[in-house]
Length: 380
Image (cartoon, rainbow, N blue to C red; front, side, top):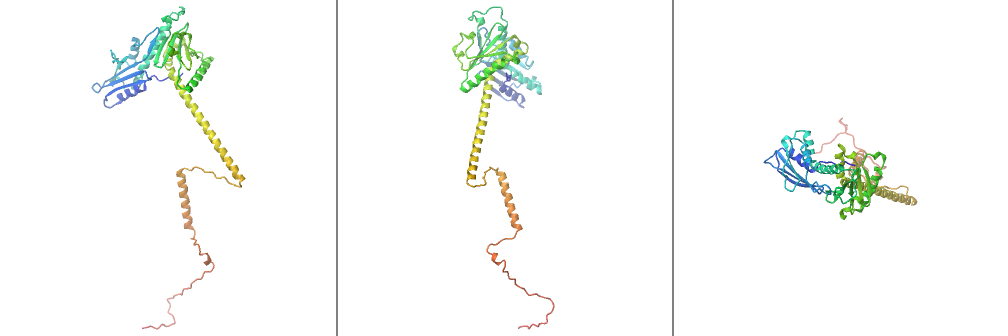
């Protein structure tokens, strides 16, 4: 599965713009990401050393655990992003879950500044990941020896996580594993076909021996039994339900961060795969159409050549598109050649051909400087 980027591109770009500005600039910016994450950046010229960043999400949970508020452990993780650079403002800005103050003067110069700003841009990913981590820990630390009989018990009820308003998923505990279930819905019928094929192939690849360490994947057109009693609108799908079985191996050490982030972005990954698949199919269709059109054109030329041969025509003239620059150069070369020929050969005048063999030469008298014997009489 693709490991999507955690840093918010809009937040990172704005913070770098403020940090690299030669003079302080006034910034009061609101923006959203993924339809459910909000940011507010406040930077005042009167206090140019501190940037305030507020963030919140519509992430909700229902079931055994409710974690709308940020825990103290998440606060500690945020503070350790850059010690001495980040301060948590208490209380946060009205309407937001968290507000932090970034001390620009304490950020080191050079490439280290870009790394710190990139880590600060991952603040929302840290909040979401830590909330899901605590849910997994809560389920993982339950007593496995206790039988799961009553599904109406709150301790065994699936946890509904709303990472995006229209894309909830469920997490529930089983005997030796934790299962995450994703109800899949798509608007276009073509997306449904591509997604269903992709899920079936994902299950087939995941069952191979080479993928034994990866979480086991399963797909079903009907919801699992554990989701009985959940809202009907959440269980009404057109692409089935995708489930991942997470064991203790997948939440040990550094694997926990990657597992949690991949679960939160599974919907985004599926949409990315469908978009790429549609683009690939369209390119193949255009390529195939071009080859068919070329084949039809060649067939027409062959038929025309055959007709010309039957009509005793020895040559077939083919028109070729010549670029304008090459055509102009060719015309100039022809003109230059014509002028050279004119200057080299004699001029031919039409109508003078009959004088070619009947030429009469006029004789001129010869003048000499020697005195002549003849006398000349001067006339008065």
